[in-house]
Length: 454
Ligand code: NDP
Image (cartoon, rainbow, N blue to C red):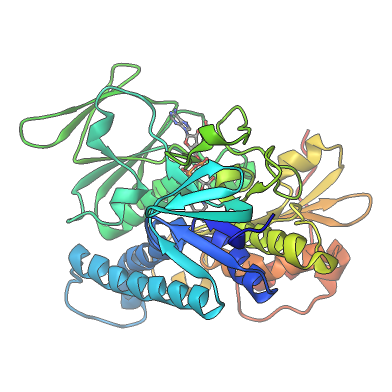
């Protein structure tokens, strides 16, 4: 049977674009459909604009610290509209970069909403295109629980385009997006509260990391409310929002920002016309080679709900392109030792096992930890501390996990991740010469383990 294309990719986000470009590079005839924005979540309403806002938010500290180095300037003023306009301009540039990447690699780009008609046919903009393989790379979408008044809440999708910075913000959730946006809003000057249903935010992260960020948020004056959840939201006559909690307490704010996870984006995709099975959370079920239960349909990235991180979608896109069109170069994606950063203020960087994971996997562990004031803050009266932690297997001396809360944690952990992948032992860390004076050197000068926990 002959098809119009060898691969039809639905979704021009990180994973879809990677799979499309490399497949075309391997000689395949490839088409991509995108209904919203080129570059997907990461470029438009995720990693990239978020990092701009985090940079913006950090200036409030930077201006202050500058005074301890002798600088004086007028009272800093922040203008949200300028930040958003400049961010939008840069994102628009990146959209065009993505367009160029696709077109220059010979991919046919269709801007519109694609629907599956059957296991080999996609309909887009009134046109039917047959494909030997179809890749669903449609990503995710913020999920807000069904509560009365949810229409008054915003999510990260809207936050990037707010007309003005709210005076007061209530962030709901305790994951990546919640702590990052709490830092952004607080740093830019909004009176910020974060409300999380559990005991402590960032479930799944190392307990020491969670506690350290908790302390730093409190020192900065972010209002943290754990073990609390929203029952309803009511808009008041003056436009402010009345938020009633499940325990009947009432809070008042100007903006309720929900960051309670993301669902797979499969709306109106025509799944009823194919045999693509979903898991119990609604994500597309795939095997280790990203094949769905419909043999010609694959899926990757956020829509499979495995690890919702851009670099993983890129790795999955690469694997799909190779398996389909360069099988001799195919190798499966390795989901071990994925480094990650949370761009809260201060940042978190982490790779490998948490202390809790290491212990529950049966390792006898030695914990090496440092907490110190970053050098840049030592000329003034600042109390922010950096935390660094190594989780070491006591028997093999292998470093199992490495965690940091502090400036540039993501930059530092990226390099450490290479060492962990190479199987570095604590001795290798000890024999590595530090770079002085840096924060990162602490990772190679941690000599004494913490006393064993009773
Ligand atoms: P997460 O899954 O990280 O966190 C969701 C949070 O919302 C959790 O704290 C969860 O609580 C809470 N929650 C879930 N459902 C409810 C509910 N019904 N009511 C109240 N609270 C609820 O999701 P995010 O939205 O923060 O981010 C989505 C994903 O995007 C992340 O997991 C991450 O993979 C990715 N991301 C990565 C970034 C990075 O690399 N820097 C930045 C931003 C996002 P509980 O813990 O109790 O389940």
